[in-house]
Structures are given as C-alpha cells and as structure tokens.
Amino acid sequence: MFSSSTLQIYDNKLKIENIKKLDAFQNSVIDSGDKILTTIETISFENISFTYPGSVVPALNNISFTLHKNEKVVLVGLNGSGKSTLIKLLLRMYEPSEGIIKINGSDIKEYKLLALRSNFSVYFQDMFNYNFTLRENFTIADDSHTDPDTKATNALKTAYAHDILEKSNKGMDTNITRLFDTEGIELSGGQHQKLALARALYRKHTALILDEPSSNLDPKAEHEIFTALKIFTDGKMTIFTSHRLSNVALANRILVLEKGQLVEDGTQEELIKNKDRYAEGGVCYN
Image 1 (cartoon, rainbow, N blue to C red):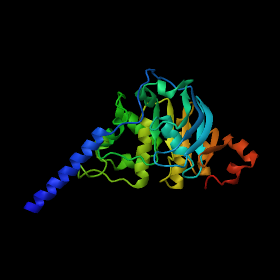
Image 2: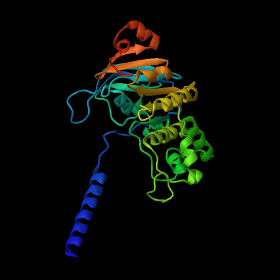
Image 3: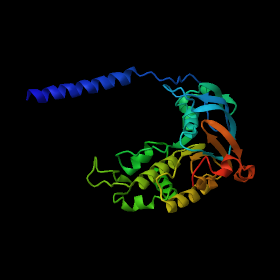
Image 4: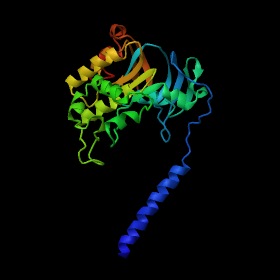
C-alpha cells in the first residue's frame, strides 16, 4: 500500500513538473504584426539563412526565390537538404537567422500570425490523425464549413480514400482507432496518410503546402493521388516537397535544394537541358 502511494505521488509530481515547464515555455516567435492577410499573390525568400537551435551547421544558406499566384512549385532534394525547413520558416514556426520572407511585398512579421497561417493548408510528412470521429478529424482543422460532412467526403474522395469511407460503418460518426470506441476502425499507414492529406484538402486556403504527400503510399495509390491533385490544385498556389523525381509531374516549376542551398530553378525541360544536378538525378531517387 505504501509503495503504491509513493509511486502515485511520484507520478503526479512528474505531471506537475511537465505542466510547469509548459506554462513557463517562451515562444521565440513574437506575434507583433497588425496586418490582415486575405490572399497570397507572391511569396519571396530574400537571402534566407537558418541554423536550428543547438546546431552549428546551417540548414539553409543564403536562399532567394519568388513564388507567384497560380504556380505549382516542387522543392526537390535529398533528406536534410532544407525542404521542410523552408516551409517551417514560411509558417513562422521559426525565424530566419538572416534574410527576410515577404508575402505580397510585406515582411511576414507584419501580418498577424493567425491571419498568416489561416491562408495556408499544410500537410506535413509526420502528420498524425486524432483518436476522434472521422468528422472531428476534419472539423478540428476548419470549423467554418456549413456542410462539413459533404466537404469531408469530397476531400476523402480526392485523396482516393474510398476504402476509409467503405469501412466506416457509422459514417462520419465512426471513430478512428478503438481508444474511445470499441467499434472504431484501425487504419493502415497508407490510410492514415490519405486521411491526413484529405484533411489538408478540406481546410479553406489560398495556398496549399504538401510535404512528401505520398511517402507511405504504394505506386498505384501514389499515381492516383497525384492525378487527382493535378486537377484539384489547378489555378491555386501549391508548394510541395519530394525526394522522388517521379513526383514532379504536378509542378510547372522545380527548385532543387542541396545541402541547404538552392542549386537549380526552372521547369523540368529547362533543368534537363542544363544537364546539371537535377538531370543527373543526384539530388533525388526514383
């Protein structure tokens, strides 16, 4: 009895310490902007360098480029080349060590943080789903839709997640996993990825960011999703990352990153003619 009580006290002490650490956490990103952002016309990275806290090796080194409305841009490069870091800086998860990022000609620090992020819908390669209902997995990302079930169903179909709908015996009220409902459904790794991708498509946005959106999918599912995305993203600014050359068909512009530097920028036809890193295939694998 005594040992059990001692263990419980120790466990509660650890929980209290974690709460205190969370309460004392200081966000390094200061939300001091006052501008409202309603649409994205251009995104400019100007001489951007960045080193992660605790590291001495720069993740990005003096990168500059501008993206325009309606462009579909793919960032390609091996793991660790800086693709995801660019996205995190754009969303102000971190601040650049040097340089400035502008949207519509204004420093992104001038925009309210919520207004900035509300223009983006993002899928990260390490995204997870929630142990709630299928509906709640969508509305947690965006609760502004007047008909969430229809929007969610359409997003699932776009992400070729018909198999999730078919096994959801309670429809949108079906729980993902059996943690809170013994009649919930368990998803495969590929199905989890398609559900997270569908949630990104469901969220209202003016720019879509997809970070390795097909990493856990088989070749057939990957082809189907990219075919659907090509239609879904028509006329919409889209940024996606990939380390597979086979996935660049969605883009009309390719940025090649290597060891934190931008080494090539152009269309696939232009980069192949250059006979440089992209044409060699050394920055990706098929």
